[in-house]
Length: 406
Image (cartoon, rainbow, N blue to C red):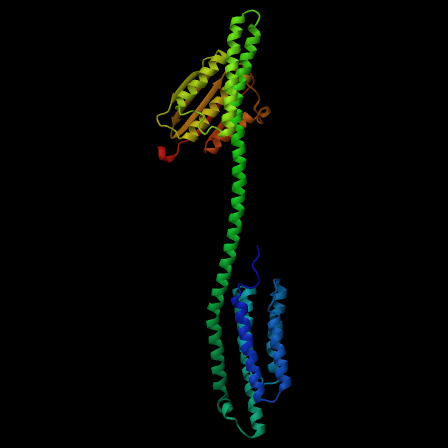
């Protein structure tokens, strides 16, 4: 976002007011001296000076040429006829424009040039008036001070213009500071809108990922258990029909549970999958389901002196659920250990089995593993997985407790 060449409407209005006063001064002087050709040339110079102010250059060399052209316009009328009064306000306009083009050093140089050009104009005018009065042999009353004491006239004029420059600089700086503040505010508002859009997109992405994790963790766990029950029913169907019937009933119950979970996930994504239970009770339910499905009773140790927040409980519950689901599907383990404890203000969950293990570099893209890692990292925690073929698998998730709970 680039700011405009003018701070806002006040500076252009100020320039045109100054140019109007200069034009009026030249016309009034022309009424005293019958030199319409020089007055017309001076007015033309003022018009050109004002016209070039509509667009200010941006490149360094163009700025220098532009400033040189400005001072050429200021000097030419006075060089042609000293009876045309000096136009110090044109120098002031040049200083105003320089403050919009240059830094501090450039601004001071332009101000010094404007002051020097004014001194030259005053000196040239005083000499011209002095020679004119001597040639006419009479001194007009309004030029009496200039003739009798030219140095005093030149010093007073220089002092007046110098004070004008000194008092003009704070005003110009205030206007430019206002312009910079407005530009920064506009940029900040633009960035804020961009950040809001980015945050909205990121929130949508996080929500989609959360939906995917919820569907995967809840429905995937139930369908895995159902698949194992159906396999068991098929295995015992001919030899032990009654036992196969039991497995079929369990699979049917799991199907009903899966349908309910899908409905709940679609409607509300189950803000509390624990159903109001404590984390210990929810994990105990997972262990019972795991035991019914695999026949393995995990060794579970839970020591939580502090009650974690709801989001931490959900994350730990889902990570435990996904870990047990993966053990059911892939590990062929006979022993499972679950440890959940609080150490140094950090809750540490460790799930370990003695299954067949796997190569980590070959199994890092699964959605289940990625979902567990995302849940831990989202709460400022860490996730670590250690596994080797035929050496089982160890999963560790550590989540720091909020300071409010400590």
